[in-house]
Image 1: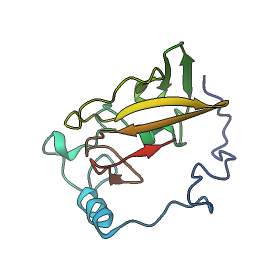
Image 2 (image 1 turned 120 degrees about the vertical axis):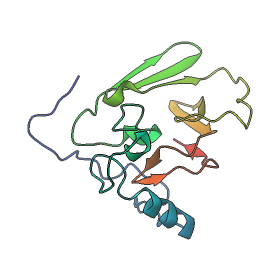
Image 3 (image 1 turned 90 degrees about the vertical axis):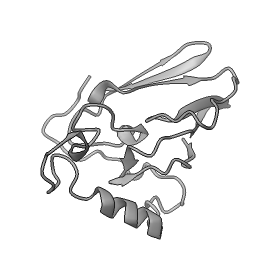
Length: 154
């Protein structure tokens, strides 16, 4: 499943399609504060390891979150399966798996939050569009914990 041969470049110009320049937008003041609060957590942080909260979810092999699809040093493999009613994406790293219903079912209630959110998919022609809501505020992108109001469109 892995295809690494000593090369650490990924050859992608961008995973970000909005904004059109392919660059991750700057953080809001709240995002900057959330990043600062997380600084020092985990294996590569500077905090002492006195309890579970001193380790990241990734350190504890719980999840990398939906952002786990972005390339990292190793473990970039994906397994994608499709049934008539869902698409399943299983990430090699931490073995996170998302089951994305395609059958138009209702979303979970707003009070039910998940590490990977609540995804619903649909096809527009040959393109799979996935919209995810109901994230908890634990994992994150680029060192910034999710907001529980995050809505992600892929």
